[in-house]
Each structure stands twice: as C-alpha cells, then as structure tokens.
Length: 549
Image (cartoon, rainbow, N blue to C red):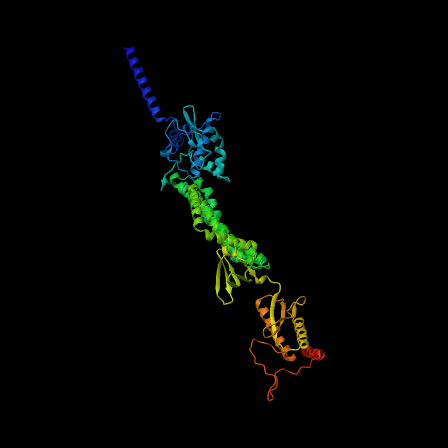
C-alpha cells in the first residue's frame, strides 16, 4: 500500500513537472534565425515593451567574442539607430528564403535591411542569418553619428530611467508622461532660442554694423538672413534632440523625415538670401571699374545663382524624403537632351551672352554700328542685347547673332573724325585759296576739343562745279553730343572766316555766265591779286579776333 501511494505521488510530481516544463517552454520564447525575415523580427520583436527579451534579441548578432551584456547593449543600440533615423522596418518586404542571395553583392547570402544604411546588413553563417561581424563593429560609430553631441549619453539615461525599455506608467494619446514633458520642453527651448537668436542678429549685430559701417548692408541684407539662419539652427537642434524622446516608430518616422527635409530647405533659404550680400559687394567692386558691362553682369549672376541654389535644394530635399532621385536625375538628363535639341537657338543665345561678357566687344552705353543697327547699347541680357537707336526705338538683337556679327564700336574711339569737302567757286584766286586754307588750319589749332598733332586740310579736287578743299580733323570728346557741339562750332568758325575773306561757297548749279553787258556789272569781285594783301588781311582778321577773345 505504501509503495502504491509513493508511486502515485511520484507520478503526479512527474506529471506536474512535465506540465510546468511545457508551460515554461511556451512562455519563454526562442530565437528563430533561419531566414532574414525571422532574424530581423527576432531582433526587433524582443526589444518591444510588451515582449522585452534583450538576450534573445542579442542572438541575432554575429559577435562570438563579446559577452552577453555587450551583445545586449549593441542589440539595443542597433534598434535605436533604426528609430533615430526614422526607418520603419516593414517585415513584409524582407525575404523569407533561407537561401536568399543579393544580386547586387555578387549573389552572396547577404541582405541590407535599410537602403539608407548600407553598412548594416545580414549574412548567412552556417544555417543562421545574423547581423554581420562588420555591422557589429560599426554599431557604436553609427550610433554616435545618429545621436551626436551628447545625445547618446542622454539616450542612455532615458533608457536607464525607463528600466531598459519596460517603462512603467500610463500612456496618454499613445505617449508616456515623460515623453509629453520632453516634447513640450523641446518646443519651448526651440521657441525661446529662436527669439533670442533673432533678437541678437536684428538688434545687436545690426546696430554694431550700422555703427562701424556707413552703408545699407545691415538693414537691407543682414536682417532678411537672420530669421532663416535662426530657423536653420533650431531645426538642426530639434533633429538631433527629438530621437532621444523615443516616440513610437510609426510617429517618429514622419517627424524625423520632416525635420530632415526642413534642414536643406532652410539651408537653401540662407544661401538664397546670402546671394544678395555677395552681389552687393560685387556691385561695389564693379562700380569702381571703367567698363559698365560688368555692372550688367551682376543681375545675371544673381539670377543664375538663385536658380542653381533652388534646383540643388529641391534635389536634396527630395533625397532626404527618401525619393529615388536617381530616376529623377536620369529623367532630367533625358529631358535636358530633348530640351537642348528643341532649344538650340536659346542655348546659342545663352553662349553668345557668355562670349559677350568674356570678350567684351562693347559695354552698356557704347554706340555700336552693326548689320542694320546703329545706336547705343542699353542692356545685355541672357537672350538678347537691347540697342536704343537714334530714332529712339529699341532693337533687340539675339546674342547668338551678335557673336557672329562684325561690330563697329563707335564708343571705343579715342578721337572722333570729322571729314568733309569745302567747295568754293572756280573764280577764287589761288592766293585767296591759300590764305583760306591757312585760316582753316588756325581754326583747328585754336579750338579746345580738336586733335592738334594730326589733321589734313588741303586743296584736294577739281569738282564739277567747285574747287574742293579736304577738311579732315579729329575731335577729342567723350560722347556723341560733345562731337556734335564741337563740329557745329568748327563749321560756324569756317563760315565766319569765309565771310571775312570774301570766299564764296560753291554748290551744284547750271549758270549762264555773261560777263559783258553794258548795263550789268560782273558778279566776280575785283580781287587784289597780291598774295601779300590777302595774308595781311588774314593777319588783321586773326589779330582782331584774338583781341576780341
């Protein structure tokens, strides 16, 4: 009887122990590392608050030489890297083939978990898929990059306070109390820092610049840059601090992406505003040069830089939002080729404008003469050059055509030529002609705007109805108005000289010349044919004019 009771007791103890062992087996999970899918799920699932088994999660690492505590820390850090970069791991896209091969890695048994983190990948070791030994070595370095400037230590403190991820307490709107407090504190710090930073730039820095600099750079250029710089600094601070709050990944992935997109956005804003500062200094430099073409280049440079900054900023923003910009760039390249073929004339004009700025055949304000166009250059643009004609109309010439044209730049002349023939009548005595020529030379010498070292005034031609005197001189004047004024003064002086010497100007006529009529006196003056008499009369006139002056 005793033996029977003892046997029954041992049977129940054995049965209870087996049941207890089966219960423990069911309650205690095990690591499944047979496929990439199972390895990633094992790593992430057993680091969740409701199923926190870090030792099992640590089995997904290929780290035989490390202690169990070191493996656990690295496994936790790896999950924090995923969370801090806003990468949500979708299990459905992870391959479940135990013999999976990566065609991009020479068909090796490797799998990159996140494309933005190519150094973190799985590899097959025996029959198991594990995070590679190379990945394990880089976890600490990547973690410091994701959590820089002491935020890594702050995250360790949060992890310690939350009891290794098993945070106690109630949730409100999906977040713990400490997360709500941390979010409000972060918003408050960003708000106060933005106000202080903006105040410092707009008030302190601007006043200092206005005190030491007597220009408009502080008010017109520094103040508009203050707010974008402040927003850039605040956004950068929020981007490196927010991951410490350990929000749920389905929330933090969107917030982190937004912050990562705002960073290049504010960088673009700052550079966009700083272009105005750069062009302001370039304008001051070009204002000291003699040519005006570089003054026209500044607005074009400003527009080009701003367009380039905007395009580059859009590409970086799309890249931070994890858009596939490779396809976009390829599409832009193909579209650019099609656009280039369709816009050959536009590109030709663009390169023509560059050649104008490099070669400088003329500057703004120059008087140019080219194929059918005669006027003053008003503006040199990307596509065309605008010329104000002497009819006060505006002619736009494509820059591509100007690059191939022969341009006569009248504005580059050192001297302005005046060439004419002074026609006098055939009955003028030679002695009077010589005296008249000497008087013309004296007029050139006396005028303040004529070139004194070179001029040509000679008896030049026997015309059909006149004796022609070549009058070939140059004016040293800066513009066309000065040339017209000097030319008019010279011509008036020539008329005065002709009147004083009684030299008659000839003009094309048909004259019936009758010299002998008893009742009609001849029109020909009675000249004193003595050259000395003519020269004395000329000398008398010149002395009288000098005395009058």
